[in-house]
Image 1 (spheres, rainbow, N blue to C red):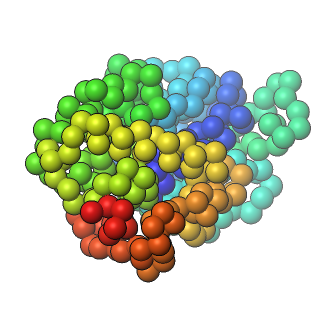
Image 2 (cartoon, helix red, strand yellow; image 1 turned 45 degrees about the vertical axis):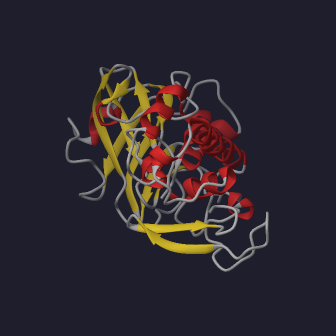
Image 3 (cartoon, rainbow, N blue to C red; image 1 turned 180 degrees about the vertical axis):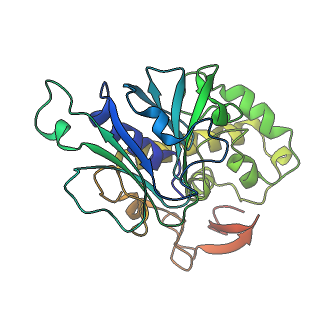
Amino acid sequence: MPELPEVETVRAGLEKYVLNRRISSAHSYHLRAIKPSSISPLAAVVGAKIMAVKRRGKFLWFELDREFTLVAHLGMSGQLLISSKQLPDQSHLRARIELQKAAGLSGKKSAGNEIRFIDQRTFGWLSIEQMHDQVPTSVAHIAYDPFEADFNLKEVITNISSRKSAIKPAILNQEIISGIGNIYADEALWRAKIHPEIICEDLSEDEIKKLINSAKAVMKSAIKAGGTSFDQQYKNVNGVSGYFSRSLSVYGRAGQPCSRCSTLIRRIAFANRSSHFCPRCQR
């Protein structure tokens, strides 16, 4: 599933092409492409100008010169690609948003004139939503992510330290801290030398602080690398894979030596997913 670095890569890529451009047409081609709670069909965005592309955690949205916004969630395999109308449709095209040519733009920025929503597994969606406190309806319950100015590290540490759950599910909880998924949780726990099954209240505040800062650091590095791609499902807006997989220390490396102590990385089933960790570094 695309996590914060992948969604931020897509957001930044879209921003280069779509700002101040009007939407000339919008079509959906799959029943699950539009979220059931969407207040309008996708065609409602026709004629709107895109004013900004925003993100919180794994959610992104297009701010429009309207009273509503267009929200996108990539789910497990969603892609938002900038494409020329002349290119053939992709196999899993779920929606298409055509942009008017931007006046005064030339070269690379004006080359793409469509946003194509591709989603092989159809867990992603688009949605027309109202704004509440500067975020769309579906994002209102999501906690700040570590890169937001309003992220309160002390409050998050206090929240986590009082919990009786294991630490990994806590940092995956998007209502505590948003943007972290399985990949970057494993990487952050390894960097902080914390076992994924340790109970939150057994960790000191300094340990939790180190973990959150480790998560932010690893995600920052992943953003610079364009995110993490293991297959053809995650791509940036130009259809290019991210290469942070080359820098992963534990995720997907079961049976390989830890780069810190040479102990073999272990993989365990935990909280309905897999966890990768070093049994020596993360006791």
